[in-house]
Image (cartoon, rainbow, N blue to C red):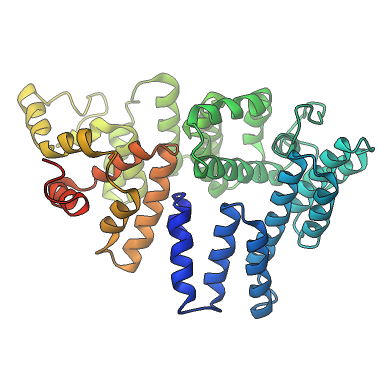
Length: 410
């Protein structure tokens, strides 16, 4: 159910839920998934019913309290967009009953500020309340942009700084949420990048300076570097200053060295000469994360056979015959089948067949891989199918015959 929802296969997720309820009508985790799927489907009243069932079974369930808050807040937003101001106010009152952490309280205060603005009432008290919860930094401005409902949003004076570590971490959380929500609704990648540029580019220098916050740990830096390296955020050029600031404190940290190389490659358009030694070191130390990152971002490393000196390109010793041999290894039927049949293959069925023989631990990795692939293809089903088909390798033809029928692909 979870991966169906993450892949925006909401109809299939709802069918899976109904089937599971026949066997486990009061299973708390199943009810949680049902509530979250209802919210993803904009069925907020249904989500509230599921949530109330959960609280009867598990009164301290934090996940469902968060879901109830999000359900009421989202419903209030839709009502305000329709100028249904009185119902909107009631929904925000219900959301307030479940708001507990500073992010929720800050978001609720900004939602009320927007409502009061539409009602032509004074709203500065709610802005002050949001500042109390979120600080007066970049995060507050980012969230205000997210919570604005009208063509004439409330504007705040520019932020002068990232006020604290919490400010930076909440901002990164909100950016990740925006990315996930955007692609779940099949938004265009470049539109999202443009949106981030509009909101965050004015604060580029401030965000760069935040890399010097002394409270940042190595774990914080690795998380932030991974975020700033995303294509949607690359115009901010934040990954390199964060990696360099981190390496001043942890000069031997392999993952941070890797992120610095990836950031340099994005800015300079060429593979730095340290890539090969770092790859060899990561392989020796069995650091699979660094190996995978380098192989993903420097594709020609796949053809590296023997160790090379740092000044030698890993593909310098591949001649034309070797290149042709590599090309010949690609199963020819996949290319033809994808061109002719990609639109015919049911996405849900393809995913199900790919995952049929996986163990539980493999299934979890597979689900994460699917979510990553969905984000990379920015909601484009055709491109997503192409990536899935690329996993099939030599058994691709047999798999496709099963999905479409033996005669379909001829």
